[in-house]
Length: 417
Image (cartoon, rainbow, N blue to C red; front, side, top):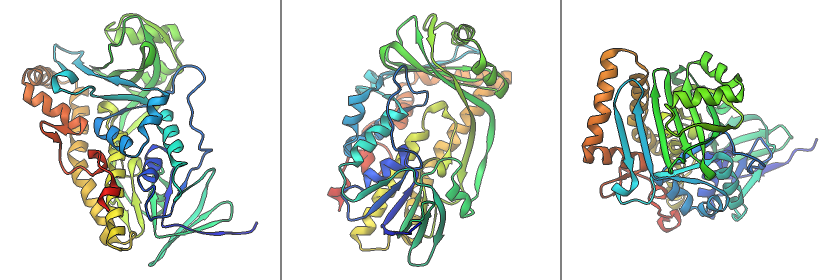
């Protein structure tokens, strides 16, 4: 087998939502970018029903997709807005309700199948001359040198590059290869995912009920279907996954207190173990981690992919600043800015999500009373409630919150150069 040596400025390992978004963010830039996708790169909708994995895309993430020209491809496929969010505790009377109209916003966000997002990203990638997508790309070895890095592919080809991006998921081979440790733990919970059709309309509302065994979410899809994320103990998750459809529909309706009436139809089910971890280092010389390769959190607030997209927006801005200043994009003096930015922005969310998970899974009577009172009290204090939801959307009372990157504010990186 003959070997070809290819040249790139950036090699992104992992062509899922986060990796493909980063490639789009670097589109039409002076950088030569190669996106390595282990699969075929074909991401389309199932012929019937819905994909099991969906994402709750915040307004800040929507702005990223709009600025990169990806949003029209998502809209042309399918998605569902959620304009309200209703959260309550099954152990008491605690409830909180968020309404986009109260905020003067059209929506709180959108529920979108992962394949819809990725298909729109790949469609957009075709428009960039500086981006090359290599499908069925399996890496054999990666070597970091002082002046560059080398990615050897199993097909015999080799890529010389200035920077390697690990976008290869929570079990990142690159993170492990370069000895980057993580801190965190496995939750004693597994998420059961499926989609269902309900007797009553979902009202474009994201519903979440906290059960003693974990949160149960109904997320709105098209045609009055809902995506289900039911987090529970591993044994119960296995039982729910293997139930006959009628038995599962009955169990789901009962667990949801029949809020949307009878469950009329269910799709196939799958389950995924839940973890929390954060990498102790986001960067090394000529290497940066993004998305699940850098951090994984509990899905109860639907922030996982949005964190990854914020990584993308931050890293793309750092790299474009370095290009403008004619700096080497792979050195630590450049990459540490990305690491500091994202670690600072993400820490409070990591702590909050883990604390909420433990608070709402506790069976201690005092904590049950506290969380019910807390939910109801927060619901009555409008400024506090609005601040919480605007933070989750990437907004505050006057606009965007915090030190958000330009793409998250709807501003092009081209105008920044």
